[in-house]
Image (cartoon, rainbow over all chains, first blue to last red; front, side, top):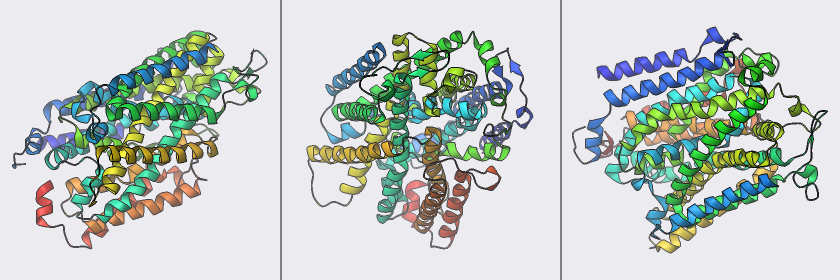
Length: 74
Length: 507
């Protein structure tokens, strides 16, 4: 149960971080070619992948898998 | 002409792959409809990613970035990285367990059982078909615009490239009706030949092709523009930020409420089918993790190309550039090698066809399982079932093809958003069915009817598929989602709870 709340909290934090208002009108270029607003969101995609990798590793629903296979204890 | 030859060779290769997969086809309807039992994690990732991306990714994202700037990426791509994976994890795995335990194949089978109502399927089926049609439309329109962009004459003060077929067609360009006909014909041929297995193989092949070709297009275009630094320097400043400036940019409320749209994957019929029928839940691990990265690999180059296009004078020449043709025209104008142009164009077509095939098949599966065979007292042979599925697919494709000619000028991105918005607004239905014991048949009916009425209302107000916002820049999907959720809650609480034996099957 504790894991579920941690996942929900991180998910909500990522949802808030998606609204990067501080980059809205920033025209700076990262490495001279990628606008910072786009660079931030590209990095965000990588962070999202990392987050889901951790969820899959530490919170995989093994009990649900067992239930699907016929074990009645969910 | 070499460009067209490359495209024809690619289409022939695709058909060859389908014919090969046909040798593995067992001829049964089960084998035709459900190959997911034998699909491994990599093919599942390619299939799910390829189907989800469609013309929306390569053609739509480039065109939208050309119109609105870099915010296009955050609007759909990065939010999808978070929310698609959440749907795969929270909805997909639970549905897999239910499908495994109770043997469901389609989402309507599941909802009928969960909400104890046969008639519910007859309400949901036409609505799902209605929402899939814009999804199919963007594929056909996207392909037509791409081939048009590649073959049309490019006339500007600096460039004068004749069209590919000056003696045959206006401006030398392949007309939309012909491209649509060929694309539908090829996809229908390979799914009819090998069913879902052919679609899965073709999806994997095509997803790899469009990812590689997208990167190739990015490299070639940036080189021709003098490097990535020079390319962005020439681009319009308004497109490098998200501030609203005339037609460019996005309001913060639009950006926030767009996060509802990626929820659509929770109700896409073809994904539902993958979830219900996968061999193992573990097959989804790779999809959950790698999906955000795959989106990034495709979308970042496309958005940059769209922004760069604002600084390319050739795209503002005598013949205007429709947003859907930006990528194809950038390649055709800047990269003069017709073989390379052909290769990149095949990448775009691959993205489009990898989505069409799964959608076509899924519609056939739903029609036979949920309409024809459901409660049928008549025994049908496998041959009859396959015939009915194929006839239904042909009917839907014909309707979509005619609509694609009528709605050709519509923006691919905006049209896709209408399809996604409808599916997103229906997610309270699946979330409640999985996580709320108190969700009832009445709530389910109320949710679907409320979403349908609000979708038709907003769609009509948009001028049938145009860009449309509610006051403050709120996207209709967000409002529809709350309407659907509210209807589900009120309808459920106002009716008796589901039977104990029903709940025991799912909780």
